[in-house]
Amino acid sequence: MIKLAKTAGFCFGVDRAVNLVYELVERGEKVCTLGPIIHNSQLVADLESKGVKIIDNISDCPDGYTVVIRTHGVEKNIIDTADKDGVKYINATCPFVLKIHKIVSQQDDDTVTLIAGDEKHPEVMGIRSYCRGESYVFNTAEKMEKILNERKLGEKQSLICVAQTTFSLKEWKKCEKILKKLYTNCRIYSTICNATADRQQEASSLSREADAMIVIGGRHSSNTCKLRDVCSANSDTFLIETAEELRDIDLSPYKVIGVTAGASTPSVIIKEVLKTMSEENIEKEVETTSAVTEEVVE
Ligand code: F3S
Image (cartoon, rainbow, N blue to C red; front, side):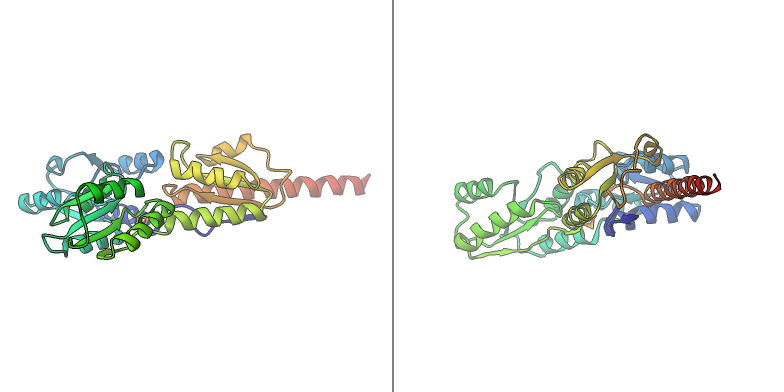
């Protein structure tokens, strides 16, 4: 029996962005993306074969092309440049990220924004660019405390705190605890997206029910490797990038096989894997049936 995780593959935001690019291409539009739309080489290659270009700067957009902005979002000045220069673009920034842009941009100039996240990540750079006042980024609760102490951001200061959508929930809880205790003036917005945590949780419970797990995704994708680790604690786990890799795996000893996939694994790859697995199952059943028939005949 094959059991597919409901949360396997793209999250809502990535699915929306990828579909948007395909829809534009199907409508016959010339499309480029600002950086690769997702970190999946098969999907990026497929888009390239359909004429989708990847550009690094919005000003590199060729004439007649529409630029699609990725789910992470971009810095405000990039949108301003596109508007000023009349570049045609579609903003596929995830609505959960746009919500953070809205929160920080609606504050007064003298409000300080604390951002829990990775300073160099495009999502955080984007969020920061929408802050009207000062902003500080940290990736641990200790670093947050250090900033608050050094900058003397005490009781009188108007403060808000937001988190990068993929920030560690554990670390965020620590930050919240400190802020609630020592900086009661701080307005806290819990902006972590649940998609990643939900996928890991489901993989963990599915791997407990299953005899083996197939995790589909890039070997260099950190969220795919995390899924493999979560599953291998409970059952035999195989990480594959494509359906072809199933050929080298003997799944015959397993009765119940769970399947999940990383955040940047396209649904066509998941479908191919499921198709290959069920074809092999049918072959196996046929083999068993014919062996039984032979015995009876003898
Ligand atoms: Fe995906 Fe948007 Fe969450 S891109 S991980 S649904 S913030």
